[in-house]
Length: 375
Ligand SMILES: [Zn+2]
Image (cartoon, protein in one colour):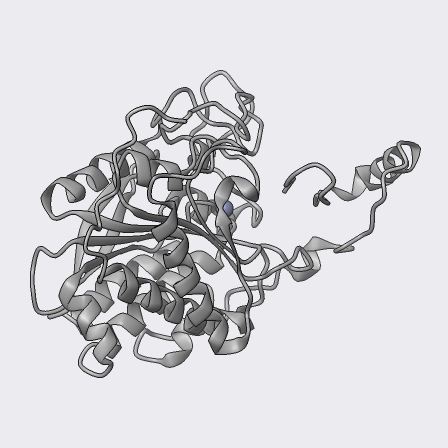
């Protein structure tokens, strides 16, 4: 990822061109070091996670799309009084994108949405969604904070948003990022769903070349995944209010809020509360294992036009809209976070979202301020 000028950037190249790339860097006098000699070595066989959802170990490994779909059905059956499954969108290939709805004693509360797996290779994101869902449900009736949160909100968790891409990252290419739209007339498949939303579509940090990893698609919300979720989220906002929206990625340890589409913009009209919410979350998260997050608006990492957090804030009206970059911090393992860290990531992230929701649920004015003209 390129960040800003003078920041390092990571590049992965196939073995046959590694020598030429090194020659190029030397010729241009660009400093470099080899982070991972052979990425393949880090891609461990993942076929050993044979636990069922009644076993703790189920939540400590990565799961295929089929396993996650089965988990949703079983999870609902296990906790019928807390959990229901709702349709949130569909994929390019026609798969249903579903959300787990977790509620306390009241129905039709304001909504909180956690989005997992928008980028296929960021496997820790869906794994963390499963862990958060489990902890929310299990702690209702045990932890007073969780009871007050779930009696105030309905929490919708989408474990895998980019289902086609996630499946492909298991079957064909572990480092796949985009969806699986074949892009008619082009050699390259896939649209970056996190550049396809409608706020400053096609601007900084997005690309109109179909082979780019940040290809934005043919138009704002051109993809089945994004257009369906846009409709669903705006319907939630209209019916019960949508107060909190978090888009979970990896990696880097960032907790960020809008704006993300360009650097140097003025803060959002809700910046103070968005920042305070992020500070509550990351302080509680750090208290668990000392994991330290960077906390700032998202364009400060890098500009990304058409990204989820700006859409969730500006279009879907979620005042507390965040993009979170989970573990690891650095590129030594990057997207290939070992499964030995899934449990700890789940524990600390759960404490973070709990602190955030305790804060947001006391906000006397939880509605996003209207921004008629983008800065
Ligand atoms: Zn991502």
